[in-house]
Length: 177
Image 1 (cartoon, rainbow, N blue to C red):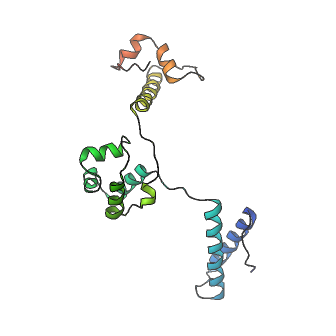
Image 2 (cartoon, rainbow, N blue to C red):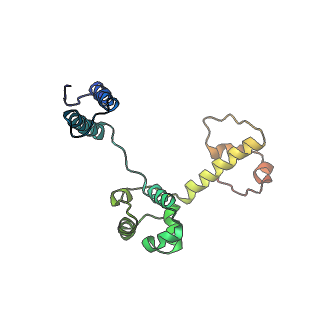
Image 3 (cartoon, rainbow, N blue to C red):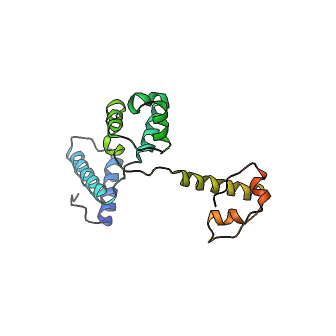
C-alpha cells in the first residue's frame, strides 16, 4: 500500500476505496495494516475538513433539536433563558439569545457556545404576514381549484386580483396591500 497525501478528489476516492478494502479484509487494530488504516483515516479527515466542511446548525434549530432529542419542554428551558415569554420569543425568532442565555445553555444543557453565538434572522411581523399570505393563497387555489398563472407577480399582487368576496369568504380579513 502506498500512503500519500490527498491532493484532489481522485486521490480522495482512491484512498476511500483502499480503506474499504482494509475493512472488508477485517484488519485488526495494532497491526501494521491497522496502523495504515488509521493514517489513511487521518488523511481523509483532514481532506474532508478542508474541502467539505459541515456548517454549524442554526442556533434556534439547535435548541429545538436538543429539546426534542432529550424530551425537554419549553418550561425546562426557563432556568437557562428566563421566563416563559422569553423562551417563546427566542424559539419563535422574535428575540436574539443574550450572552447570559448562551452561557447558561452551554453550561446547563451542553449546547456548544460556538453554535449559539452564530447570527440568525428574526422573523418580523412583515415576514410572518407574507408567510401567512402565501399559505392562505396556496390553500385558496387548492380549495377553489383555481390555477393562477402569474409566475412573475408577487404574492401580494396575486392577492389583490382575487375577487373581494373570496378574500373574506373563509374569514380572512388580512389585507397586505
